Length: 234
Length: 292
Image (cartoon, rainbow over all chains, first blue to last red; front, side):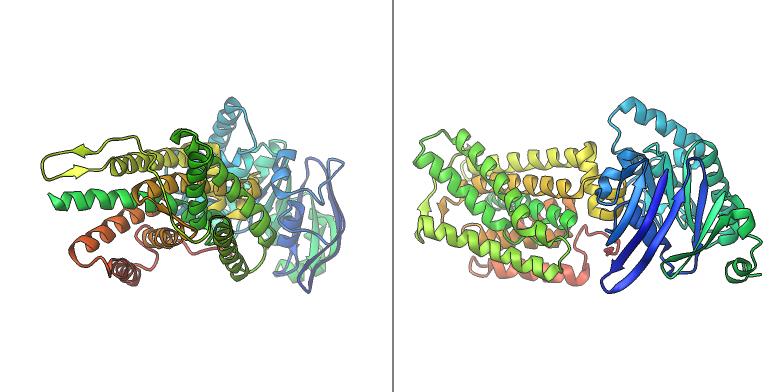
């Protein structure tokens, strides 16, 4: 479904991604794990067009996305829940959700999707008219996910959804990711919480300084000695 | 009674400042730049009305429409040609470019129209309103107040109720996140320049009707004052520009009337400095830190 081929990204002189290749198949939960600065966020930014790769290819559903502008990508069925949530702080919860459906033109369809999102996140319904900046961290994360779901994506990219949340909320967020996946969407998850990420993923890629250094079934990587030592703290 | 007359004229002048300030503040909020050529778009609007009426012989309504069209196209063109290529450049480069565009417009006007002021014939058809023996409100003042309030109301509704308006709010808060929603940032910026310039055209008509002279520098001082009004209200904030503009007009007119007409501008800018010392983000400025 999504294929990354030999991707190179530079920030000025810094070579951030050094020939990255990986693949996400329909229906999978794939996780990219790795230390801070390994290039995980950069990878997601390159896929959704927020960054221009120097070379390499991003193929989604057989179409080349490499040069597509960021605002065209949502329409193709790909949503990105960015690191740090980045909800529109000064707007209401409802306004945020409606912006998630910006590319949808049918009012009926948007209303229907909104009900679906409210069913998944009842808290957002309760707080629909509240200003997003006044939500708690966990609620903002749910809003960011709900906003992404408003575009009815076939694949959803999530960047550190558990960052800064209490352990209880982290478990809740991971349950939500599982249920989004069960609802039919493909998930590409970037996480520093490798243990949790591996526990829900089908396959995983381990990144180090802009490269994939290890890949395989999540269940196998969880028992891999080097992964255990470096990322699972065992 | 003279106080009411000064106040009404102050609100009228403030309405003009507010319309211009909206252009500054919207462009700052959405494109994150100070468009110092905005004041000179007013001058172009004024000359468009002047030329179409005196040479073309068209009716005032057509002349106003022509000014709106010319200014809108000019604003969008300036953005496309001068600012868009600098989208990822340092803010300083964009600022200097904007000052360059401002000088370019002023000097083109000097070249075409010379340096003498022309007399501008008011396009306002409204008659003065004689309230009583001591108080008369000019038709220009009435028109300016009504037109600017209607435009501000319409703009507020447009921003808060339409899809394009929501895209503008989203881009102004977080350009990257807005792109992830599928919002075309370049298009949103173009629309912002179009709206800001159209408002400048309306402001130019009102300004030149109230102060019936026009030359190449007509837009410069009102431009700077309106920019000050935008900072005063909190740059980036649309209600802030409205409140800032009107307050500024009132302060200017009352100082002119009661203190001294020579130092009225100095008083206005002193008030700005005091406000900024107390509240550095302006009256209605956003609390949020600017994201990079």
